[in-house]
Length: 160
Image (spheres, rainbow, N blue to C red):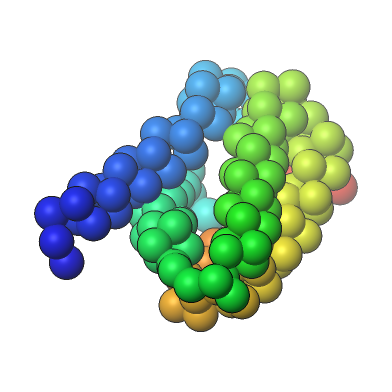
């Protein structure tokens, strides 16, 4: 990998980490008070697990985004635009979920938001697959985590 490509990869990873961290603006202040007061299901992970999990997921998203960005070829151009559009949509929905669930302190709105997020991630994975299979595979941990988070969000909504 040449220097320019390495810098591009680093840029995408850092961008995903920073944009992903925007959600923590709503999350962090609400964990010790509001979130701590909620009844959670038995399978709710400890709070300390969320930050490292999301850091790893944003890293994988940054690498996947880089692979899509670097994909070349006439056949790929339109599919790449679609993939990048879906990536942007799902990332916006990711940050929106933090606002809905933590910022608005609403498990119901969070659940609605995470359902849209889940579908947008599936569409993103499918669109990435058409451009670069490795990029799509890198998003599998993300959809698995968000699937778990959807069940957790639903459970919290029902319990509260």
